[in-house]
Image (cartoon, rainbow, N blue to C red; front, side, top):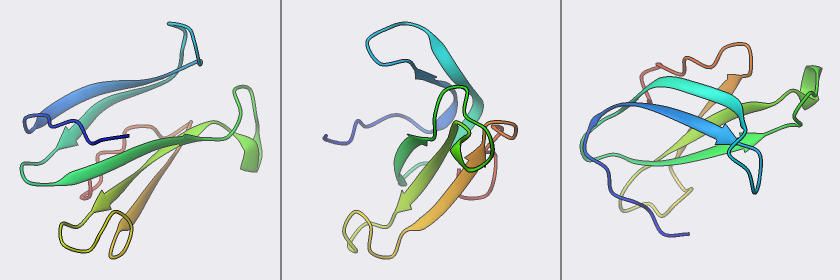
Length: 88
């Protein structure tokens, strides 16, 4: 999938159940910085617990290093979805 350019700012993102409008994981207050390239992903199971709990994360892609080389992963558990860390 190609990257979608967005202006810098704070966004409320949502992970939705495939093929529906059902939000299974709200991600409020995600700050995107100018000139950065992000890859967001969801992991785990809806209704999962422990290691299988639904969560989300982001990879900060560094231009010139490819999509994953030189990337910094940022994780967020379903119970801690603020994701307002320095990489976001």
